[in-house]
Length: 296
Image (cartoon, rainbow, N blue to C red):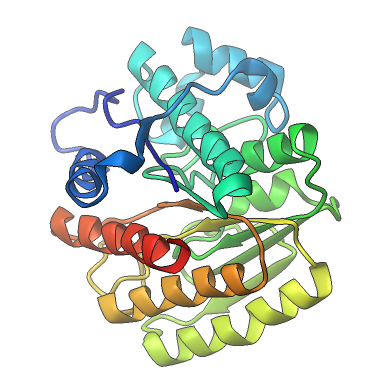
């Protein structure tokens, strides 16, 4: 099993920016100490791959630095050549992990999960929708027909939902905080909205209720799992109250389910904004460690 990293491609951010960029290098260092032989540097997503899910004009503006001021504001990151390269590497890591999952049953991106990116613009710290691009690459290049995107970030995958609206070959499942960003939500294939303060037991019950029914009816040939750390009770931006143990059980359930149903699974880390960045890294690392325990 391989884990792809892109933290060497640094996104320059101003002092005090609320996005915890250093979590990626910390996570890669933790994985390096745990299973160094699995790490590979992420390739950059190519134009022909990005254009499977994104408009050509948007990819061009992202690449050459001609985003409008409003587009930059919506994304939440200042544009720079480093930002454009980082976005390509993050998407490329999910593509590479998806390809690897077909051979190894599971592949991991130590970043990714940028589900607020739409075909023609980015939002909410998301430039390119890596899950959408990877799903389309699997369908174009790897004879995969049906892809399930299982999005367990605390925020709805609004960009993903819009990109695949009306497309029966991709099932978008988003289980998220009802009152979390985005205020205006899109319609996924299935949205499960959870109330503020939702704890481990009702969260896991909802997951165990919905995931088997989705898989039995949709019969996916591949899964992309967004294992957000932001349902955590200590998250600054989330409104749910899961413990670390609850998140660990979530990961083990999804990954074991994929293994038992012989569904190749791609794992992306998605969001995480705990007050202490060490908590974010701990949750993400547990996701990686659980994947190794389940699939090796």
